[in-house]
Image 1 (spheres, rainbow, N blue to C red):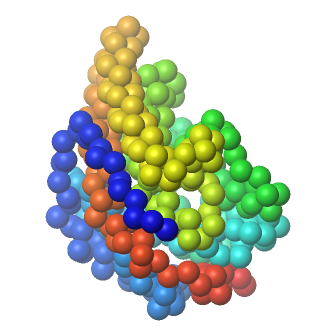
Image 2: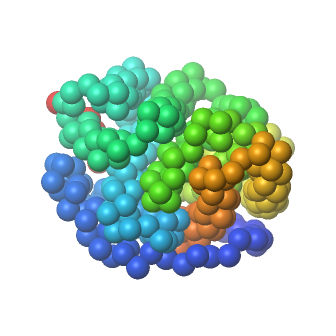
Length: 335
């Protein structure tokens, strides 16, 4: 693949810095993996070290307590294991195998007894996360997490059928597949808030979450398209732009950069509209404070996600990618 120049991005949001507990959280994540029998092979271990889940969590939650930071990082560690399994491993190319694995994970999320290491790890994360949250929050988190998991099945079916999604369909799909929605839910834990259903239903709040999620998905696609091209992975916005417009890869990357800037503008527009809707609905007290907290913190989350993609070797050094589909985490999904 010829050298591709990434576009110069305009980032309107200021960095809130990095959580000082990052190194402690990294050590806690690796201890957690060992305690849950998630024993990574040398190749998988190297991939996770290059991925640096502790960096992403520390950039998007710079003020989280150490307890929350550790929990969120373990969720992300687990999510990256799932992602690599279904993107790189055989389950992502066998719809029946994928369906069975995803259905089991969703069942465990709903309280079924775990059978294998990845399910046991999920059970522990679920219990630690959901036990002190409201029923409304738990419903939202369950919906967002299950929706993310089922995107792997959708992609496995499309691959088996030889189909490639349209850009419009992929944009909708990516809002779940990037897995940002569950972490927007987790933000409420560290922020000490619990939005009521009425607040979650505000059009501008929905638009704000959607824009934040779209920004993360496209940023990830821009930074990972080279790695994914090596794997023959077509569920990537850059690849779809190139296919749809019949451009060079560089032109597709440039167009994606323009779209990313437009999404940042959508974030700002949704912020302004949410302020107007709060006033129009007469929202006061704790609910108003919680929504204002989301407006403030989501900016830092967008910036943290952006900075992470510029720093993690998973994306900055795609030439180091190691592809061996025999060396996956399938043993963690097998009894």
